[in-house]
Length: 295
Image (cartoon, rainbow, N blue to C red; front, side, top):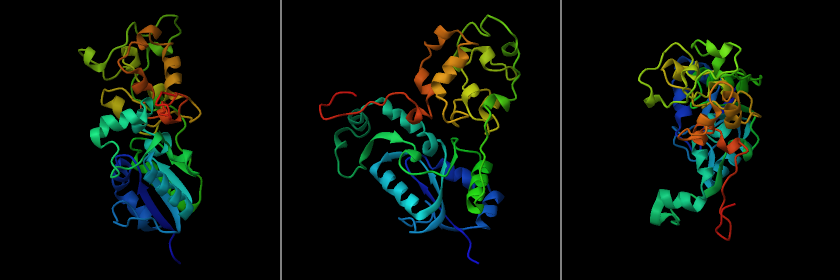
């Protein structure tokens, strides 16, 4: 009997999710034992086959070519798996939605911003699910290799894939002390950037030290690698539930443990709270229209 077919494509992004898949080592062999890999960014073929059982899509929809390739993948595939925060949430590149497209092109390409050699950019960056139906989603930047393999095996076997549902604090090794005590006072009387502190305790919760951390509103599953390295979570896996407004919910939650006013003076509050999820948030997008004004 012929094996199910698998194709992978990379849209606008860094292709780090494909690197993560390659890093699965023996796990990749488990996938390849069950499927025929018929297309990938490493295979050299320009177009996806006309029929394929499972397509893994990495990257966001940022230009017309991304849209065309995503639609071709959906037409060809029985199951589409969106992998990585760019594909699922719009990703870090989605921060360009804060600027007019004309300004983005001018800043990036200068005098060549109207060149026909450049890809035609969409008016905004979108997650893949804004353009095509997505059957499974694996957020993360990049997702853990085991999560990618688990999702692909579930897709190939036509079984459910259940991503982690708790927040990152549940798997973070750091001790929560003051935050677990009932008090009307803030846990910390200030909010600090990493470079403002002479030392950071590697054991105590970063929030209790006044360091803004996205852990309370970020999906678990990465093993809390950043906080283990003594730096705060930046929310790359998106909210634990996609209906949550990650940035707004984080500010709301942290106002109970950090001075609310100090939060507003952070260097880049939007770039922290919405670094990976701006395109799926309610935050307004700035468009160009025929009059050239912001909308």
